[in-house]
Image 1 (tube, rainbow, N blue to C red):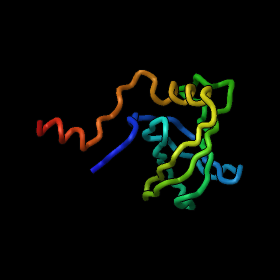
Image 2: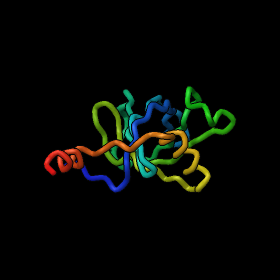
Image 3: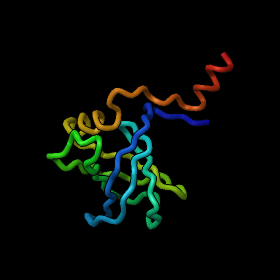
Image 4: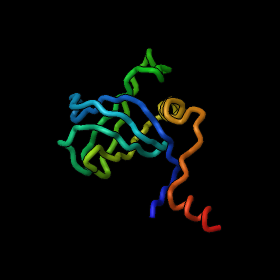
Length: 121
């Protein structure tokens, strides 16, 4: 059963992945909350508990063109198509920018366990 403390939102933000301040791969944030993200990437040289930084690249969500947005994160799980990471957002300003880019006007995804409860009600 899926259990989350925060709502997840679908995303399509392109990112640069850094380890030890060195760019190592490109990826895409597939879904996110204000606490964490799932990053789709072909990069496999990463394990749980690795510290990374995720830099949101300018694109169609280019509300941040004039400012680099780089967020420290801790890898919490790894799959064949990417990894989950807990975000370490240090300032309210960065949290607000991230929320605007990722969440925007979206409705949160309903977790599978909530759908089952709604169907069985």
